[in-house]
Length: 388
Image 1 (cartoon, helix red, strand yellow):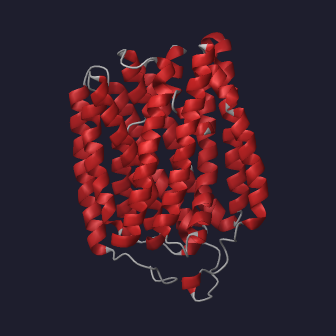
Image 2: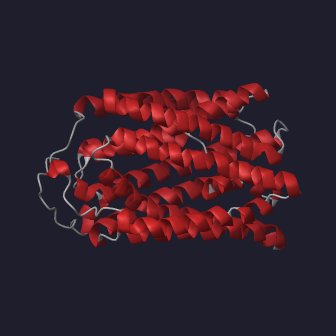
Image 3: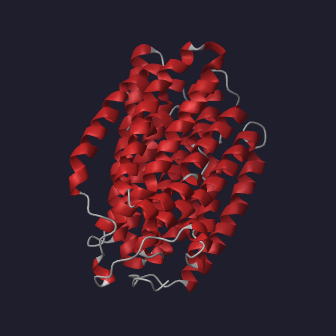
């Protein structure tokens, strides 16, 4: 609720402070890159220190604090854009700190349920928050006529989430404990140096990471998408969070469906992502509201499919003792794609939409080919310890 509520209006909010389309694209793209690239460090750190829980709590606390603080940005004059940008980047840093550890914990707990379903349920519940959070911001903005009041309201679910984490801590199993398919074997701590950067991970994992990065580059940030439809007068600024909430609802449904398919038919479900992403810019940058809304629904669905299945497939490709590192490496490569995609979209969205759509389509063709190669060369199934 907290960070998705913020992201739903990040583009229009920065614009209201005086930011240009390029600035919005760079800041939101850099935010996603920060949330992803820094996981290269925090994932390896979690595997070395086995402090998965501590890193998880720290990351959530940063989000709970930084988002409400965005309410001060309109009151600091010309520094508003800079203050908001820094807080957005700090919130995304919190995401980077918690995510590898959180994903490793989820992969461990989903051993008995099926990882496709486990990550799908997680993603669907995440999308519930992503649906409600923007509506909270929209309601506050509609009631007061100011976006910053919505950020203050989000302090409440942020505080509640930290209380829930305090209750959950003693119930989370240790990632260091042997998994059922490990045969009771305890794994040593990961090596330092280059191994912590994923050099010892399977080649198929690295090819898969590159394919995911290409689809992420095509999944432009909602900040850029919303900046354009608000700028063209298709949607009032106060209604932007509602549009985002609709996209998140579509993502939740797509996540549940694709997670179940992942456990039944395998990672082939991921081949749908490049096809969906390639269509999105043709729709979200149209001049008719109905077409834009269809495109945003597809954007949310593509993100839901990717988020619910990518982490499950990584858990199959990589041994348990190296998963936090693997999630960090994956996120770092995705982050490069997010930054390039955000900058590309910000530079072209105002006057060169056709060129932007063509560029994204080319990226998705390359992503589809890479995914097909990985799926042919890597048989999906339970991974014996140390076999890859």
